[in-house]
Image 1 (cartoon, helix red, strand yellow):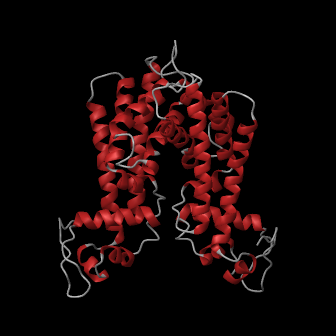
Image 2 (cartoon, rainbow over the protein chains, first blue to last red):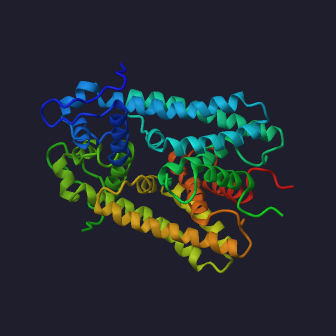
Length: 205
Length: 205
């Protein structure tokens, strides 16, 4: 049940007007990432927003609803990258490079909700569904690695599922340390990751 | 305050004898990883072990004590790798390769406690201290990358701190997916990671 960009009006008590649903969602994602989803109560979230708990419940039916929406957001961004890669007319190696690049950019752009997605522990239905979709993403990666190996574009002496996990282990680590105002822009990070993953750290003569 | 390998004796109630401190610690780490440290109460931990909460408190003064001990365990394993690397008589590139390899093996051997270490959010003193020590580890990595660049053994067109983060992003991702009975042994994983990180995915002619 989606309520659009509802505004939390002052309920006469501690409520403060002017919060859009987007603001609430952003605050929820920050709180979940900071203290953990399980450890964040709706009461703590209301405190964070400076509104009463009942004012918050007026606009959001449950904590799980916020989690579901945040995960949809993250999965939507990653799904957009997969669509772009699928439609791209090129070799599997070119597609894999595009996937690594696109995922890096998506992660930088949507770091908070992707962080939440990657830290899922699968304790609820919402989380289990999101983890299913994450697994579909992993299958695409493995298919591209195998295809690139068959074409002779990717070294043959490595195991595709493990390469996929390591490659995206590297990319996904961004959510732990990427800062929007850091030394490198998302474009520069995508380039560095491409160099490292495909070219390797040892200089090529 | 360490109590050695205390045994939880049956307290006459639901207590079950035979748990060593190591068993308690292992159960605590599993519970913290599964549900999050904040979300795991001493009561839930006692339930998991099949003992009463008071029996558990008889042997452990707080949840934070268990966290501290688990983190010491993880940091001890990683510290052993750093010592080995520091004592190794070789180039910085050789040391970096040794560090990647040793960390991979340590992570596979101590996956549960290292998982806990890597998921720290820094909400308590124990966590903040562990994060300090984790940062010292990161500095070693950056120094080795810079040194190897200066020797011409590592490509010059990459930023050392970012390379360090990405390299260990890849290695650390092991805690998310490594299974002791999986297809690849720790040795095989260490070899694959070395190939990928240093050689790159594109075949060298």
